Amino acid sequence: MNSRNYDIGIIGGGIIGLATAMRLTQEHPNQKVVVIEKEAEVAQHQTGHNSGVIHAGIYYAPGSQKANFCSEGNGILREFCDERGIEYEMCGKLIVAIDDSEVPRLEELYRRGTANGALGLELVGPERLRELEPHAAGVKAVWSPNTGIIDFKQVSQAYSTEMRERGGDLMSNAQVKGMARSNDGIHIETSSGDVTAKHIINCAGLHADKVASMMGVDIGVRIIPFRGEYYSLKKEKESLVNGLIYPVPDPSLPFLGVHFTKRVTGSVEAGPNAVLSMKREGYSKTSFSFGDALGTLTYPGFWRMSMKYWKVGFNEQYRSVMKGVFVKSLQTLIPEITGDDLHQPGAGVRAQAVDRKGQLLQDFSIAETNNAIHVLNAPSPGATSSLAISRYIVDIAQKSFSLN
Ligand SMILES: Cc1cc2nc3c(=O)[nH]c(=O)nc-3n(C[C@H](O)[C@H](O)[C@H](O)COP(=O)(O)OP(=O)(O)OC[C@H]3O[C@@H](n4cnc5c(N)ncnc54)[C@H](O)[C@@H]3O)c2cc1C
Image (tube, rainbow, N blue to C red; front, side, top):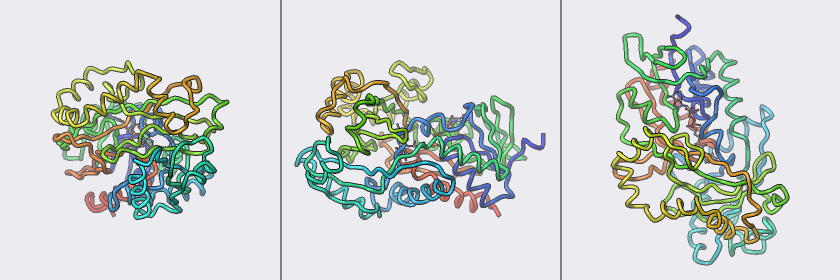
């Protein structure tokens, strides 16, 4: 049973867990590392259902971890991909003010992005806007040439391969069901047998709060799942979009508003919205888990959040069930889009940490407890930032776990 004893157990084989495991095996080759993932393959949840955008770091409050990790992550992610031949495309992004009322917020985004070090940002007028995206509406825009597209599943698989080549283990089909401290470390009960690790790194995404509570840790937040629903443009309409077309977002919310996203495959997605999900991994409108719904509805922070954002929440739910309303939102960016141009609905689910006061955590949140590190909030741009986040986590691990 010796092979089942590890120095570090990472729970969750999404992009953050795998990036962390890869870096640990690189910087601390004497540590025995295992990634424990409940699915048969890595990157099946947030990482495998995201928009595939390499963000440039425009939106985030200067000095925040989102701003710092995104601008660092953008560069080192691309270096990683260049060295390994992973395909990506720097197609650029246009953030569009649809009328004069949005211009002050757009200009603030330009100032923020510049302060955050987003490279090559330009404020452009209607002529240049139409040159970049001939079918987009709008009076003014921020052009970000340092934004690109990639397949984050492929990136995660590369992290996983590299981690295993350096001696790390991946245990798949292994759902962590419980943990208990013993003299040997932390005993981890999984659906594929038990393992022991001296230290834990909790990268369980939509289940990060549950995994923390298995360790008896009160992390002070609850993960509330928000589904992001989107459509694809029909093949013959893909030429309406050259790259990425985004609206000016509501600064009080961590979501960016429905937008057009070109994918590395050449397809174009329209969305995603942000609706409350009654299941943490609920990818359809009818997905329901009694346990997840009860967990959300009995959390005081959920009701405080609902009081604050009931109007936004109601509008998002309404737009989710009324395709015509969804199309109307898209038409503010590309007026000639019609409902007939959209097909193949899909969805991802975001893990949004909410505190007891009902505040949506805006920044990344990574906390340390006895022998463990917990990634509590890793929303977008978490995938872009994965290598920078892994550097931060490994630095904490080095000190806190006394790694040599
Ligand atoms: C709709 C959407 C669009 C997004 N768009 C972008 C984008 O364009 N660009 C960008 O940079 N970021 C984007 N993001 C954010 C990005 O996808 C996330 O920040 C990132 O994927 C988080 O990775 P993770 O490893 O923390 O979580 P996940 O990918 O969710 O991985 C967590 C893993 O833990 C496993 N797990 C959970 N519980 C257990 C357990 N008990 N036992 C074992 N395993 C367990 C899960 O199966 C899962 O594989 C988007 C996110 C969403 C949802």
